Image (cartoon, rainbow, N blue to C red; front, top):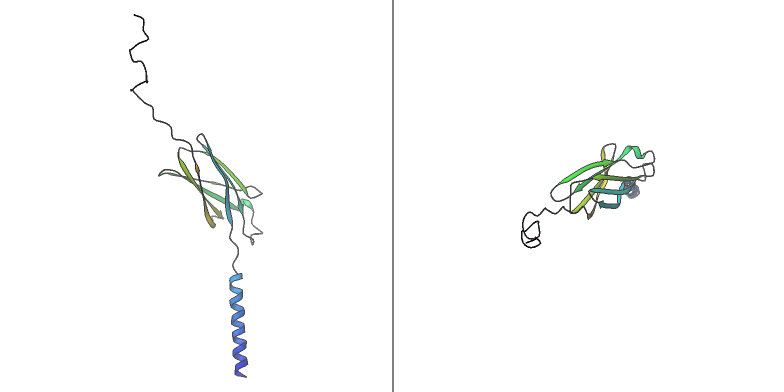
Length: 146
């Protein structure tokens, strides 16, 4: 009889162990589908895939936090997804060169899921004006009437 009791106890323990991993929910995802620069304006678009157990969650509860990083500087702004869980943000920026955008989903102010990064070519840096030197103005040689 004691052997049967030990067997039943080990079966109950095994049942508890197999239920533990399935107790956790899935994680929400953010995807960046487009990141482009046109002049000084940067456009970032993507979509949010809510967690499978988020049936009562609406897009108005979610916010996508976007961070735009350039050479040593960063700009942060946020956007709310539409009713189809898509988002699009257009922002004027002073950052130039290669830019990296980082997106993080926040639901009710708390981070949900992982950060996603995407790099793209940002606005070109303005060339510094050249003062003096060859070809930069009137030189006084040639072209005059004598």
